Image (tube, rainbow over all chains, first blue to last red; front, side, top):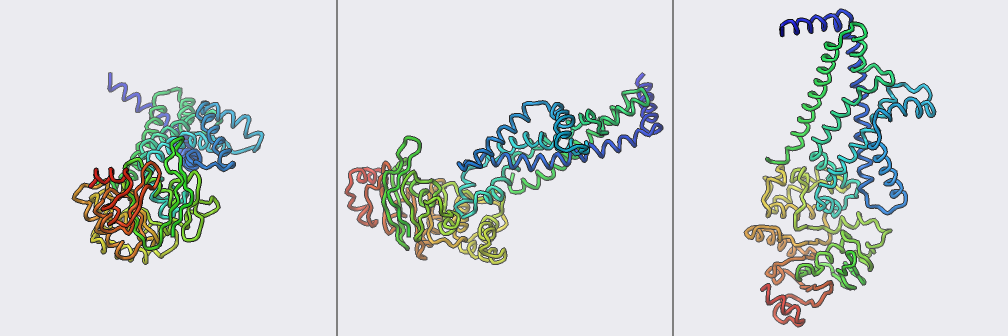
Length: 237
Length: 240
């Protein structure tokens, strides 16, 4: 019985992925998934850091107060609405109004980058707040500006502490990109759909792309682990 | 060198410093003593604006540093500070801890800063710890490194906020020795401490603060042998 099941799987796999050239679709999908994820991840990390620092600032400057309000609004709205709705809204309503014929991949990158930034900002904010106040005071008494103190003293310690949580965010981001098929991007998930359209068989294509997603996430986890070990060099434990 | 005019500090409704007027001259070693919660640490932290005064002025080397128009970062370079909890940067090596500020601020090349950091480490006998991280040092070693980290900026005055209070008793001595050497070298120092022996031996002036007011101050001999204010008599009877 079991042998028959495996036999059928390998037959379907061969038929869909090799004979019907599903591997080409998967490779193209993999490229799109990786490209969108990586670009969104970078945008999210930069945006998240900036928003976190703005939210933590105690400045009473009018400009800063307004910026803080804007940042609060941003995290509230982005975290309060589904990413799929944001994607559809951007693709069908916002982009046609401000940038006609925007490449759909660019739309996806921007939507996922902005979305990820909202979550990352809260993670980074918690990391910054967890660094002892004495660290900031020590930096400032040495004559460093608040910006340099943040960049050279507080942020490196914060990032070390939040790396596992940040890893979670990145993993979630990669898997969330599987909804880009809704706006017509041929990502990994879409590739599986297209293969089923050729073979009328669902098991093999979806298992195949699941394994590809899994490989990406395992690779990322390894990379983060390596980075974390380097940062923990100073811990002596 | 430092002049304090009508300094008041509130934490919420709590009036921590009450209209303090004080001058600290170049070369003085002022030791501030007093019960906990008296405002002595807050007073010290006001001197380099770590606490922003609610009202009043702080003048340092001819500049009103409490004015919002002053670039406080420039003046803080000249005011070293040592904390109770050391506050070494745990993610950086000892050498980097010492050279970070002078190099980042462009005061010295990295090579020059490294060379001077090694000299300073040599002075406190910790040359072999240059590449270690703070977590590998004992409390006394950390505090000595914190002192030379402040010295690496070549400050004109050093502020000490209870530098030995977080140390094991047997490590207090090694930190006090470094501070004493610094005093002998002519550094202007303001020290908040509970070490009465240090006050007696090193201070040029001892100041008693209670409930946000400087109740009494004198040169150490008279301060300890002939206290006048009843509150100080009471305090000394408990700590000596």
